[in-house]
Length: 136
Image 1 (spheres, rainbow, N blue to C red):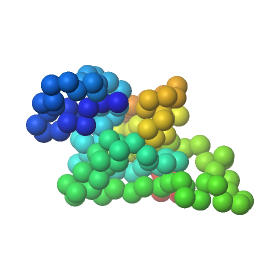
Image 2 (tube, one colour):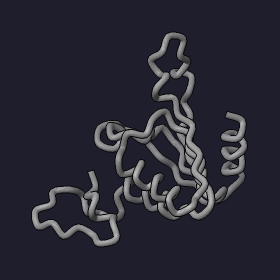
Image 3 (cartoon, one colour):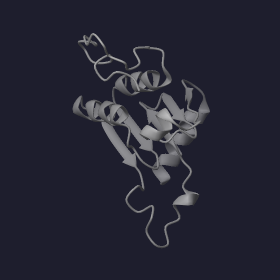
Image 4 (spheres, rainbow, N blue to C red):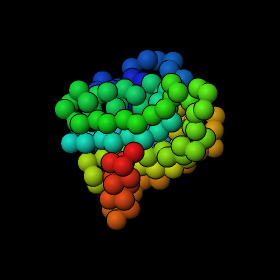
């Protein structure tokens, strides 16, 4: 996992820190996009259990970004749940950037699963995901 202090304003000052300090890691790249949100962030994922991702989303909200989240973590195991049909995992940032793929925003996805996340910076696909979010 990336060092929590490394991507903070002060950076990591711990001598024996064994966490990742690679600014180019996939998780820190994703967090960079979340931190870059200015106006809106629409998130549709099964769950968010990765603290670093949750912190970036909460920080965006605290900066005044309009954050909307669709998730079904609490109801997933309930009788009659159709969560297995809920395969969306995406985020539209400022209606300009799309993060999507099999990557669920969980700690397990970061450290143990073979997940993917594709970043789109232009094209009509972003508008389609934005419309899809509005219909959920």
